[in-house]
Amino acid sequence: MEHSRAIAHVDLDAFFASVEQMDDPSCAGLPVLVGGSGGRSVVAAASYEARAFGCRSAMPMREALRRCPQAIVRAPRLRRYSGLSRAFLEVLQTFSPAVEPLALDEAFVDLTGTERLLGAPAQTAAAIPERVFVVTGLRCSVGLAPNKFVAKIASDLRKPRGIVVVGADEVMEFLAPLDIARMWGVGPVAEERFRRYGYRTFADLQGASESQVRADLGDAGDHAWQLARGIDARAVRSPGGRKSIGQEETFETDVAELERLRVVLLGQIETVAIQLRQRGFAARTITLKVRTGDFRTMTRRTTRATATSVSSELWSDVRELFAAWVSSSHAPLRLIGVSVSALEQQSDSEALFVDPIVERQRRLDGACDRVRARFGRGAVRRAAIDVREPQ
Image 1 (cartoon, rainbow, N blue to C red):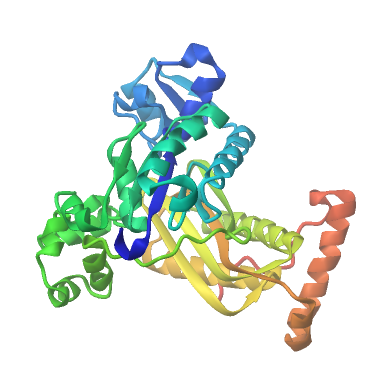
Image 2: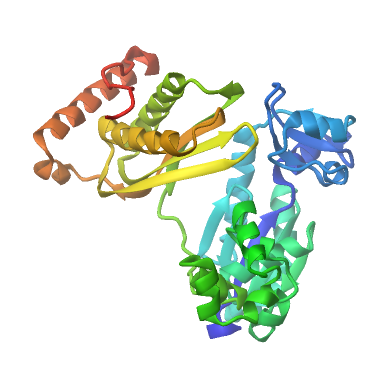
């Protein structure tokens, strides 16, 4: 394979729904939807039996039940899913120490250099699903390719229970007939832009020059041109710890009142800041996520020069992101959330070089955290931070 690399992408099939079917045999072979029962709930997962009726994840539960009224609806059980996810990852780590989780139900596994112990990577890829099933009771699909991009596409092509192996000399031919929507990161808006310039399949991009694609698509053109040829040098990176921390809320009815949205954001970023400090981390990147009533999802992010876990500093960044969104595309929201990433281990020595005001805020955060630890989360609620739009 390309540069002697062999990367597997392993994806549990209809994870949440499959867990519900496994734990309750009376659901086996029947359409199952996992999600809330509220009027504005969305489908977190749909079994393959439900997908046959057009149900899918992120669809409003009301619409899914209209398409499949006989579906069995189960509330999510995140603790159960998390436990099985850990078992799933532990299985993958028996094949290679280089395992990079993408979500609870999927991960990359670098099989490069495992031939002497495990045999050919294709043989190992074929062995993974059986081992996963024995340990977890769940089925999975596997894509094996020279890199992460192609492996992820491959794992999705023959679900459920599919195994697709793509050799280095087969990558271009493998990708060519695929719809451009299969390109990782291409959503509906980007897809429309690709199609506007005549790029409907990977073959269309493969047949264009790099300069032409760049002229058509801008800065994203170079990356798209490379991906269309299956060029992806990213390494499989085992997490050294948590990559991000976030909070989000889905509303029962769309919310247009800016003050209410700001108060929700304040509570979310305060929770995130507390979790950062509890884990000894600081964050450099702050992301705002909003979803409108017509299911358009938008994100805005900012990256700080230095990492922080100070509540007031994080809130200042969130306020600016929210104000920028309000000024450009304010619409009633179904969901709002914040997350922090680019996490760094926090060091006590960092306090030597901070602004005195920030240091006072840091000490205030520490005092509040100690009160919460003794008397509970509700013992201290932050009310001193101005929730109004920044001037």
